[in-house]
Image 1: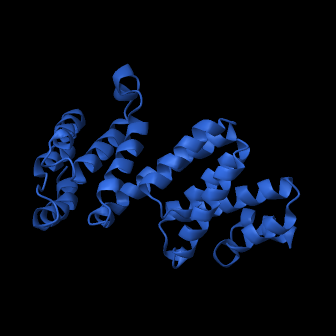
Image 2: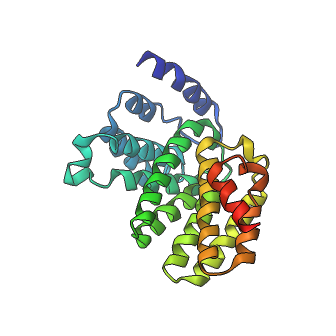
Length: 243
């Protein structure tokens, strides 16, 4: 617990200095660190309902983080009242992102985004692989809502839309994918979760094009990752098969 406090105190200090938000929300921070997640969510909800604080971003973030922690525990997921806390974590993350348009706090919680992304994409892949495309679509849609810079999530969203024969939606999602990909910078410096999702998204999307006989498009899609993922055996095998 002491280590947790040591990690979280710099965030508390930053929040208390930030002029863009009227409240530092130290009370929510303390509840979160004390793992009183139900009370933290309830108190955060009161802030989101009040006129003077409803536009602030941090209460939504605490709702997301608390929901995520609760989703790890059977005592909550086995309770009908809290059955969907994993989904709520993504929902509140999306609400948070809409309030933090200038990303004043976003980078202070990189570890959380990485953990949330990892859990979300694993669930998305599982749903996709079992053929639950509408559920997979909702999963990846939530991901791009709170993290639109995550190019791999856009590509997987497009792929699930293709599987659902929603060609127009898939085309729009691929436009967003290309935008996000163009702004990535050095792919090698992306967080591990985003690199993995980007690579797997490229492989899966390429395989879909290949199965449809769209070989030129498949080559173009896989080529975008050649300089970044060619050392991965699965990626390399598919690339060499097409070239």
